[in-house]
Image (cartoon, rainbow, N blue to C red; front, side, top):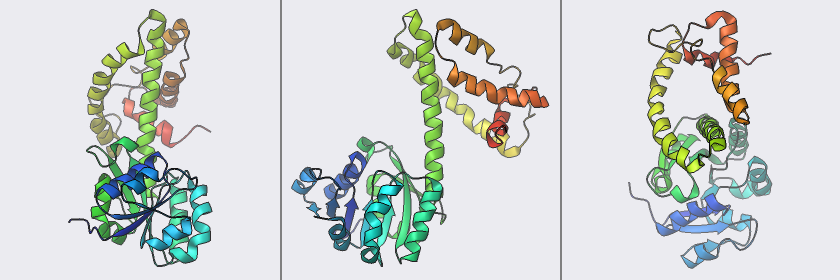
Length: 292
């Protein structure tokens, strides 16, 4: 479905991500009103056809569809709470990074004020917006998602996860959590090699294809976890996965063993509980049920 270029849309927040979202809509020919809490961010957008609002209230009143991309949950309320009467009867799509419970709270707040609400989790950096590879996860009002699907797809591949407004945020944080732990593992590997005179760049050349190949194990782990049987044949056992040598080598190299020691603690808790012969995927039980 082609986007109706007569659609009016307002974007509140012109940081790196908000600016990229706005720029994509302006390039697509949508009638876009923009506003930012600090001045000086809208010049390029205005030159390309956007309208700059003098206030958040003016921006909200300009369009039936309001996109919010601010710093955090508190800033969303700081900007929108005084505008609740103006927002009534309009559609609000919030792509500010929040916790699931904060997204649910905003959805309840919007419902109480007669505002249609959709929450989004952006799986992209600003430079990826409008380009292949970008993804945005949505939850909340399915009606809003369907109605504005063409607009949302201008930014990224759009996926809807259900009426629970907190689900997009939960998926977002789960994916980012995986990313940050992977990044920490890369940094630990680079730190291990540094005393031997190996540059981080050289290590990256080796790590990128290796880690990419290892992602092929995800589906197998997922099948074991979903099946709940950690004794399925063919798994690497927890006892075999002992990471003591990694920790000792880190200490001998004079670097912190914290990233790998974290994984060893998850393994050891299951071994101590009598599950040492079971598969590595069982460490999820250490994560799901934290130690007292």
